[in-house]
Length: 132
Ligand SMILES: CC(C)(COP(=O)(O)OP(=O)(O)OC[C@H]1O[C@@H](n2cnc3c(N)ncnc32)[C@H](O)[C@@H]1OP(=O)(O)O)[C@@H](O)C(=O)NCCC(=O)NCCS
Image (cartoon, rainbow, N blue to C red; front, side, top):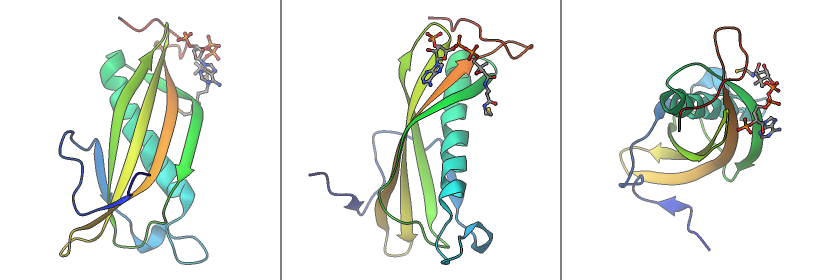
């Protein structure tokens, strides 16, 4: 089984988005709200999809979403987005999220995995083919 606690971020790819979880992002229990994490994942996935589409995209589906570990206030989260599949108008993107809990000790945990589908859209918000 994959060990989700590592001391370093992936070295073979670059993060698409990095952001610090703030107190205003917490749920009623004081941990980071899942909706905030979903939002960061959607932003990271869309950055990747827009690059591939060379233009505007809309999120059509969240195919999978797994919160593997909690995120805490002060964690630096890094989202790694990668194109998994290109269809006629759709682009499916995987996003992995790592949290650096204590940046001095460099403790790093994979907290989330997700798969989202974006659609390339024109100026009228209608689907348009993705260039292969
Ligand atoms: C995105 C949108 C333009 C797509 O229009 P549509 O008429 O539903 O498009 P289609 O049915 O032709 O599907 C377009 C593509 O999405 C894929 N798709 C549709 N539903 C899907 C689902 N549930 N899961 C995965 N892919 C899906 C289709 O397979 C198709 O891919 P392909 O062209 O590569 O084969 C439209 O659904 C929309 O505007 N949705 C709201 C978007 C939005 O507000 N998102 C949140 C903010 S960005």
